[in-house]
Image (tube, rainbow, N blue to C red; front, side, top):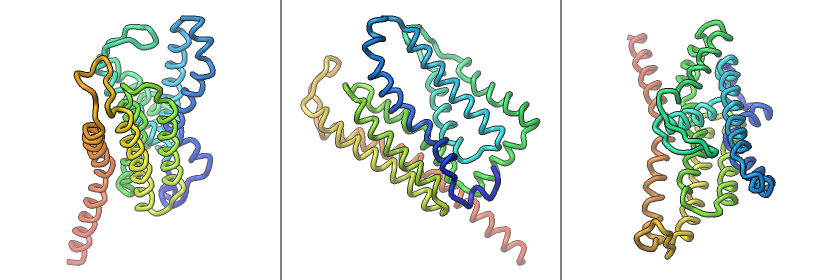
Length: 269
């Protein structure tokens, strides 16, 4: 990443590239709605498996491209997205597209491949050095990494909700809008505010929607009907944890300022 890139708004091309993880669910939801009648008639898990591997391939290509280009701003959400998937798959046991899958160390192999291919293509680890310098200068990049994982966390929060496609699509578009403002803004704190604002608005919508959805509802796995109070309780607690993780990188800025101040005093003395 060119250091000048941190001080300028991203181009619209770069901004569109950054939206991949946020537009993924809306596109899959739309595609599923269109193809659902045909897939049900086929009764074959192969198309679902093909889509899964296709998405994984696109994500890994984006990571390699970002590595070779020395970590431009648009690639950071992809790292958060893929890292969360990797951590989840490491301990996963279940079925995917009709096939039994058991997580293990192999879940890290795709990321290891990205590091290997990226390093060979870039002929060294210079991209990593550039990455560290960029994060030290603009700590919001770390927040942007976690922001890229938020679509998966919102989906997880909707695990037991039926007919969730439309509301999740709306939330993903809101997160995407936050990413657009982040990419197109120059000021560091304005960038940070765009991420906090996008997450906050999306999570408020989730809290209200789920409070209404679960109030007096009792599914087969529930010992008693849900209440809006209980729903607001767990969603607010979960949201607070996610917010803390999102804002935690501000500690890098505090450390940078403290280090700079100490160095200045030392030089002056």
